[in-house]
Amino acid sequence: MRRIALLFLMLLTALPAATFAATERTGDVVDAIPVIDRLDTQDLAPGQLHRFWFRVSDTSIGQGWYVPVIVVKGVKSGPRLLITAGIHGDEFNGISVIHRLGARVDPATLSGTLVMIPGLNTPGLLHHTREFTPSVGTADNLNRLMPGAVDSTSDGQRYAGRLWSRLMRPNADTAIDLHTQSRGTAYPMYAFAETHRARDIAMLVAPDILKIDPGEKGTIENELNHDGVPSITLELGRPEMFDTVMIMRAVEGIERVMVDLKMVAVAPAATVTPFVANQIVPVRTTRGGYTSLVVSLGQDVEKDQLIATVSDPFGRVIEAIHAPVAGKINTLATDPTREPGDMVVRIIWWSKDPKCKDGC
Image 1 (cartoon, rainbow, N blue to C red):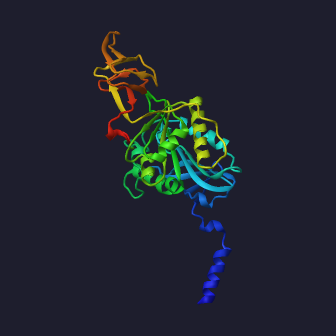
Image 2 (image 1 turned 135 degrees about the vertical axis):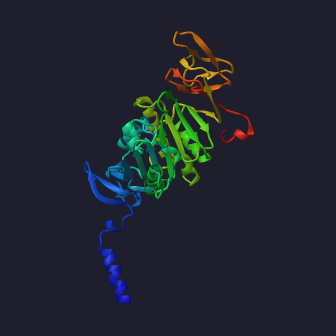
């Protein structure tokens, strides 16, 4: 019996290490990039930048939905920082942040591992839609479906479950999920933070506005925080464009987080002190028509201050919209056509109400 056990042990040690690797390679290659079915950064070679396609799911015609994955693995051990972008298919600034960050981080001097996914929602990106739209008649918000369910009959739940269980969650100690506003609206650089550690991360990034927020079920940020991974959502301005200034601010902010995590030694200093808030209100029209804003993004407003007018097709003002509270403008509707009940701006402020201490 001992002789059999010894022979089995010798056979195991003689087989290539890749046989037992937790990163599962399918054997396929697309544009010279290997395809994987599962990622485990622990078995990747240190001191290198690795690129993969993660095959998330099948399309309705039997092909694959592929998601790009970039892993920068340092020569020294350390934490795993997960950066994700493009879970909404009309939000592009975060994708450029990842591309630029990957080009700036040197694996030869990095401690730990940078895991970056520049485009989670492949069908949404193809269709320029916020939602997950793999086929006609399906439109799920992937950022409300985490952690998903790999055995679900829902396309969105399966897709989310595969991303979560085989790619994102097993490779994250800290996380930043990159967004912009969606079509027809604009943000400043704006972060949501749920936990105390998440707030520290957000302050290092130094957005224009930081909202202390209880989170929303099904989002990457919320589900990771609840699973013990400090995470923030970082909003980067407008959709469907590359804003170079906003992109570089985010890159440098993430580098400051990496300094705090002791992954890199230096990063550019922050030049913005965030406005910290815990309460927000959308301001809406009651009439439909053409909206003209008289306030700008990030502007301070007083209660009852005029913020917009709505005009009819002849240019006659049919509604004047005033601020219901004092605060700061953190969202604008960039599309001037508004239906009754549509949002024109959002105003954010710090509420002293004790129940809002951790966000309302």
